[in-house]
Image 1 (cartoon, rainbow, N blue to C red):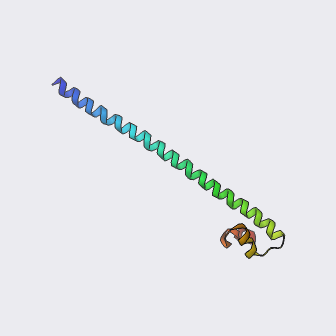
Image 2: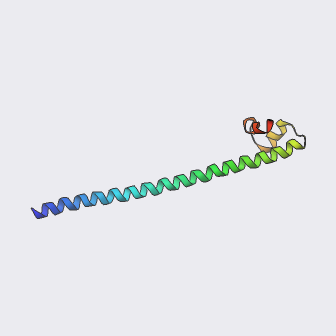
Image 3: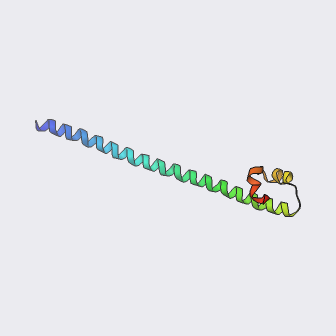
Length: 84
C-alpha cells in the first residue's frame, strides 16, 4: 500500500515538475518574441522618422512630391503629415 502511494506521489510530482518547466520555457519564449517585435517596431519607426526629416529638407529645397517619394522611398500615405 505504501509503495502504491509513493508511486502515485512520484508520478504527480513528475507531472507538476514538467508543467512548471514547460511554463518557464513558454514565458521565456514569449518574452524573447516580445523583445524582438519591439525592436523591429522601433527600427521601423526610426526609419520613418529619418525619412520624414529628409523629406522635409527636400521639400524646403523645392523638390516635387514625386521626387521626394522616389528619393526617400516613402509612400504618399507616409508623407501625408508633411502636406499640412
